[in-house]
Image 1 (cartoon, rainbow, N blue to C red):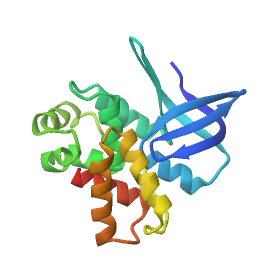
Image 2 (cartoon, rainbow, N blue to C red):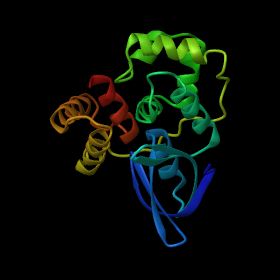
Image 3 (tube, rainbow, N blue to C red):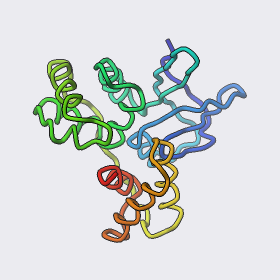
Length: 197
């Protein structure tokens, strides 16, 4: 089992970080929450806690800013019907603390508001995890980014497309959010667009 990777942060996107270690560039899939924390940290050298996903011909590294988020990710994928990409979507739509609170409070509506999570899956998450999750140690960190700049919209669009949404639908959702809130932060822009999609 891989525990973590340390190295130079070569590239940072809302859904992926490329970390160079010993001459190799590792593509690590990340949540929006981890992206925000890495961007806020602003360090060239980073440490990401890893989950190594290996299924038949599919192999991927999922990276997390802290153990707390990784622990919740592992708990989420233990629930039948939730794979790594769905768990990453859940952790991109809410912080680890918000998701834990929703599970503990048995707030089915909040959990099923996440794209791709239906009523039965939300109920299953609550049923299987309500006694396993406890209060976490992480907290959301927001950084100010001018929302009207095209680069912010492009980053958000790229993140949504990488999460599996069709480009026209993602663009329409982003335009709707930016029209209502021109100065929205990147993380909030993606989260609000996810609610529309």
